Image (tube, rainbow, N blue to C red):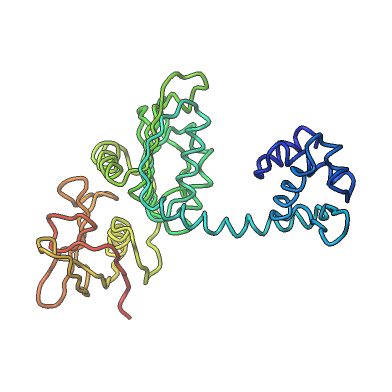
Length: 351
């Protein structure tokens, strides 16, 4: 590292220009009197004392004022670095705590101008998905994100994938990339939603052409992403042809994404399995948020995730549950036509 860069780095640690000059002078001699440092740096001896006290408070030097004349000695650089590292690590915890608190409800929009950034943002969102991914993507781009999609499926994320093709060629092998995969032999925009919080919309040209003047939009908006999910289900998903459906997962399992619970209940019912459900629910028409637990047997699902669809409109995903004395309907957060809404569902098979 040259002298100019070293001075810049010390300045980034909060040292003034004169403090940098004084510290480097002390480093060069190892130990010196205030007069010697003043002569070397061109500042007054009184100012050297003031700066040296400041450097001592920060752990860079030691001031030996028990001898005459007073001397200033540089602390070994490794000790200084260790002390600075400890301070940064200590500060890091506090910064991380404040950042996490402010990041819980992120609200932002980004206009993306480059293909590289679109790809980077798609990959980042898919990698961080915890519950649900809805994605439409051109076939040419699929190999670049296939690894992230497979990893998402493996960690239990519901992945709904539409692969589009401008030349009408249906993708040959998309098994393992999604919970349910569909294809569409027409060009379509790239659309991604993750966990009902993150979203991205991009013209296809942005990822298949390097010189496109099109723009994409990425956003973190809990109020807007569900609207995009509804558009995905109501338009692109319905128009596409089903290609693959993953096998039902092993039960018992708890689902924080209600659509995933509906999908798994549907697959198990079609396989002839009896399915028990347990969920903390809130009455849809209630005036308060009182929660009760419902347990029963799933007798039917209403869904449009796999063919044949059984719902009346695209966003309807419902569990019909026999609780002994009556049959009730369960929906996810924000439900308005079901009897109850729930945030978490546990499915199991009776022994």
